[in-house]
Length: 411
Image 1 (tube, one colour):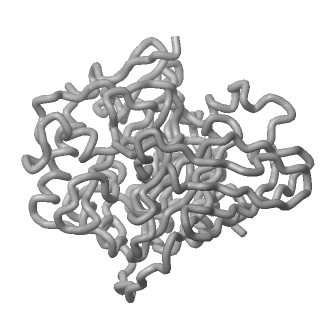
Image 2 (spheres, one colour):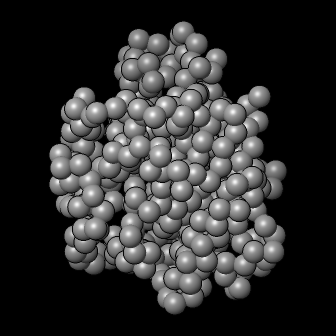
Image 3 (spheres, helix red, strand yellow):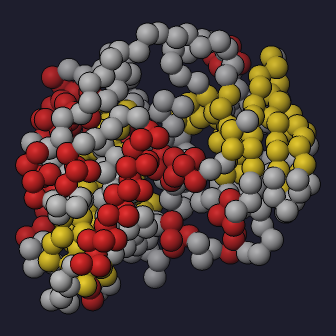
């Protein structure tokens, strides 16, 4: 069984942030389409889908899913409803590739047949799916190396908190001996600038996901002490519903990719709670930064999708907070006044101010990219890929790109 825990919800938040005007809802991950949805989870909590009575993990409802491929396109999904509420799935799903979070393209006109969608409180049952008319089974049954598929199921149109992932293996995985990865070298220059209580978290990074999550919790606990002792009012960043519209069709990041597809195939944008190495971006668990990444292939010759390498970070604050001379921001271990951040101010409207805080995440671009890539054994990189990443970072760090790049469509 795969219990739906807060960690898995966080995984969904980070990896699925596109589709239908709502963030963190996965679509075919063709990153950074013309209108990128940049909405915060806190804003979504006010949506009517969370009305009383609706099954939702955000209300503490427990759900476990386990999928088994029976052959000939038939999938059995064991559903364990541990809640006091009934659960009714909608007859829709997304089939995703784990390594890329990219949706598998269904066959034209193909439909999935569903059987048993309703599950009573505190009950266990089996949902049966017939994928044979919707997908190329021969392609799905090809063995994968250190990879697999997963299903995305929903009871409310895949909105935030109302979708669940369930791993699915169509064939026996081809295993390979993982390479030994050394611990990441910390950025000593930035660690030295951090608050003394927070400095150890920047000096000691971890590769293990569970250890990173524990370190993040310890970091936020230490931040509370820093905030209480601060000589000033520490304010939280916000995640407004904005769209990044600035995509210049003349820009070329990599000349091996067609000009009109540079943004959709080579870049990815998302809201993130932490940086590339598991260090939280803010002093509170609710704070998120807008992260822009470049995509690198998993193998030589791959031209679509890939692994995301974070390159630039932006934080938004309420304009009224930035105008308070007593206000402070806690960003990746450092307490900073908005006067100190003034030179990094790249966009604003009557409600919000956006700051480019990338310089608080690394001091050496090449060393940063090398450190991120060293965490993974499933990526391919060469001089052209590195130049691509450098071009992407240079484009988004150009003040003119962000100066008029956002539009607020919530009004």
